[in-house]
Image (cartoon, rainbow, N blue to C red; front, side):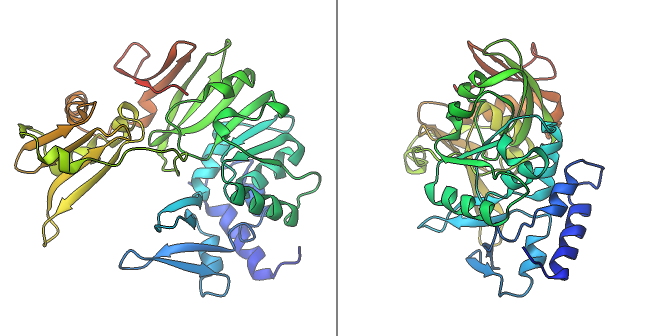
Length: 362
């Protein structure tokens, strides 16, 4: 593909500056593989929060594409983002953690635009990369773009399916990487792994790096940087704030306005997939916060010190437990780990025998 010198120059600068600037064998892939063919358009919010389409004809398009920023690439009928091109610095950090080298076979959960698969193929060879996405339209687009931006040799194998089930026809794999938020390590990936395989995946609001041991076993630790990825698409119940408001209030001593921010990461492990919101007065002051999970459990807490809870789980009780465990807030992600056995999965703090939280079946 013939490129304008300005595009090539932007890509060289982009590859050299993303992330924290440390040396990485993957920077050459970012320099060689163009991002813009995989993101011919994206969506950006204006000052009123409305999504606006940005294309190659818009000023600043290339600068935005070759920046260290996630780009929203797909919205649903309600204007909710459903796919993105991940933040390149985060992609680089995850690829470094994956520690894949020529000869490794990689399974990618979540094809998205196909850009990440192209980076993998540049260093490892397309014949060693398998990528699966549940969205047929995304897979079709990614496949076409991978063929158009063809690295020497075969393009990655891209298939439609739920990536949590892996892709048995091309197993086993030595490396697994997920670009969609997970709630635990999918068990089928363990079944398609060789001994010593490495799994790098977003779980909660961080990324875990785990090594596969005996059948059905894996152990690892969370990496120190935050991570926010699109969740795997799955149905769930809406929050029941109306039902919660009909219940008698209970007292809470927590500082409602900021407690969720202080314990957000451990809360993402204790309540996988939770959502939250806040209510504000006309002058922008927080008056209350809400939290819910997709089983219908809902809690609404007001700054006057009262909370109402409904559903199968008492969510605010869990918030209070975490606030007591982490009174200073913001515990370091790298102090948390993950243990997977055939009997289940647990995230833990400091040591496997420390405070821990069961994760849902993968």
